[in-house]
Length: 396
Image (cartoon, rainbow, N blue to C red; front, top):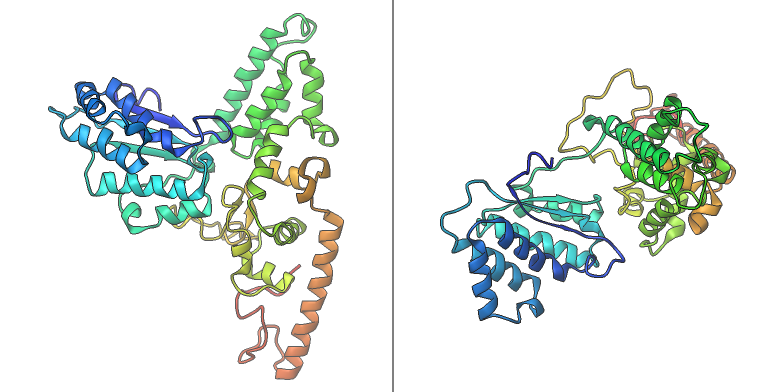
């Protein structure tokens, strides 16, 4: 990407929660304007003049900053840039305040759609519900292209290279400690295992390398901790913090834990309707409870923009049900030392699933007898809850 953007990068801003100056949206357009002034020939004099006329612009709203320093400045630029400058905004979900995040998208939409500002924006974010809603607005939907960084991009190949390079650096830094170890270290099997556990996400691989290469610790012992399930709590503190942070925004964490528990108790993805029947929820309630977990879960309608061809031989319909995107999230949830209040007791979740399953089967039998229809898929019975919404014979 860096090679492709050479000579075209206008500016970039990387939001990061908890870091002063990098979590406030107020700094975004001032920073981008400064970088554009440096990277776009002829733009600096226009930005300088505007700042001289309005020296208090840094105290103004994002809308005023965007209009004055970027839209108006670019409108005065002659000649226009030969190539459209690219502005990268990464980690939008890390910006402080959901409202601010949506305001940023609305302002960019107006700048591109209405004012025809000669910039191309590349915005990267976790697919949180409120951000997805903003992109689905007509004003943004018609001028954007959504790219889902899933398995179709073959991330495992890049993660493997990333791990190999990271371990090579750790090996070199600790050459005396590892003088008795044959290179390359670790073996191919360990690398492949870590790639598998990454589930297509660099954050797992980066967290593992950071822990293994920590100063004052022996790399081989650190690697053993990462590979041993019962000793992983300290290894992935950064990753655990991220998962806890995502889950902590829910006002009713008990409901989230119940739904996630049922998901884990099933060994394959399930449609939302199945989960709702198991937990006695109303239609649509399961997706509402999990509304903000699009960065951790895959929902049946998540791929509307990227049409998938489902293998008819797939016995579980992995693209038809809700499923966890990351193996590390599963490990986090079932480890009380890591997930704390979000811990899922698997024996309890399986027991709940079993009891609810037998209860539903009993109701079906009673409904069938009452309707006098000798079939597990009765027609004309309005009070049979499950079959009317999805085609399955048993919740288990």
